[in-house]
Image (cartoon, rainbow, N blue to C red; front, side, top):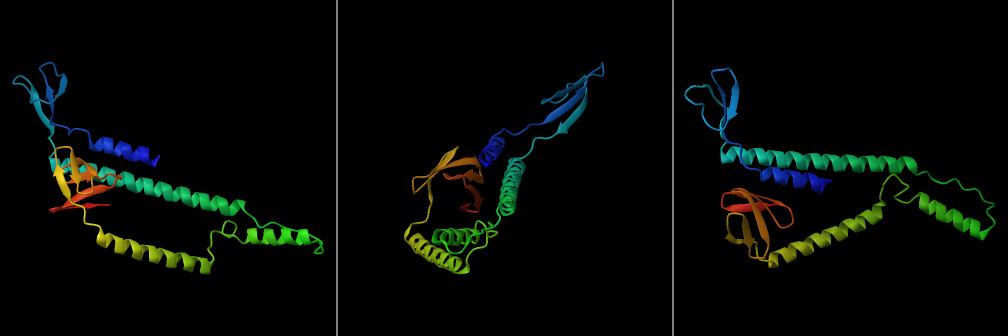
Length: 198
């Protein structure tokens, strides 16, 4: 769903710019809309001027950002609804047993473990396990930061009217002079002589 919506936004970004529009009235009073100025025997004038490239780019970028924010809100709402439904549908099981049967005691222990799991516990994590996961995430972040220092920065080696190519062999699609999309679908914006992709 999100991919379809973003594809529609990119299709809008590729549409040609709307030109000037004139509304003219002839001798019989009939209104005519055209992309050319009114003729000598007609009355009327321009109702829409041709937009600049900067205006077109700004409108398309606003549409793209609005659609991306809409998709993020939709995904957050879906996740919230899923969590609410999960919490409502899961209840701790009620178990009755004699207490003398080993198999019954083992089943009870298994049910208690299941009832206290994250799935049945409102999504709350075990604090010790969460601390361990946080430590592993920090180690991974440090490893990636060290690796990033050894990888040369990405720079564009060649650009034409439709595409740019970087020193890593990736291809970028140019939408406008200051906006393009990267190989992984990330949006790239020009900032002076530099491009920022995220």
